[in-house]
Amino acid sequence: MKILLPTDGSGYSENAAMVAGQIASKHDSEVIIVHVVEDKGLGRKTWRENGAEHVINSVREELLKRGCKEQNLISEIVDGHAAEMIVKTAKKHNVDRIVIGTRGHTGIKQIMGSVTQKVLQLSPILVLVVPPEFRL
Image (cartoon, rainbow, N blue to C red; front, side, top):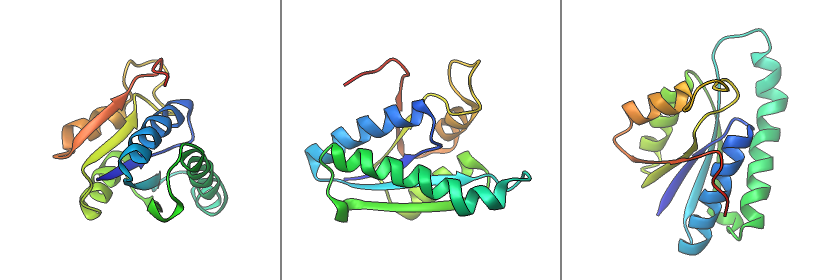
C-alpha cells in the first residue's frame, strides 16, 4: 500500500500524520510526504528554502516514532496550487489513499478547509479525512 500524506505543518496535518503512521506501520506501507509551496506570495522563496524542509522533517520524525521504516518514507516539496498538486502527486506515485487533515493553516473558521474540499472534489483516489478531535 502507498499513502500520500500532504502536510502544511498545522496541528490538523500532524493529526493526519499520526493516522497515516499508524496505518503505514501496520501494513509496512510506503508514505509519500508532500508539502506544497503556493506559487504566489512574497515569502515563497524563503519558505521553500527554509520552512518547507522543516515541516517535512518534523512529519518524517513523527512517522519514524510511529514505527514506519526509513526506507518507506519519501518526501517531496512541490510548487503550485495545493489541492491540484496534492492530487497530481498522488497520481504520479500511484498511491492507494490520501490521508489529510480536515483543514490547514488557512481553514480556521470552516468545518473543512478549502484545500481538503478541493482534494475531495478532484481526487479519483480514496481520501481519508482525519477530523481534528480524532485521537489514537
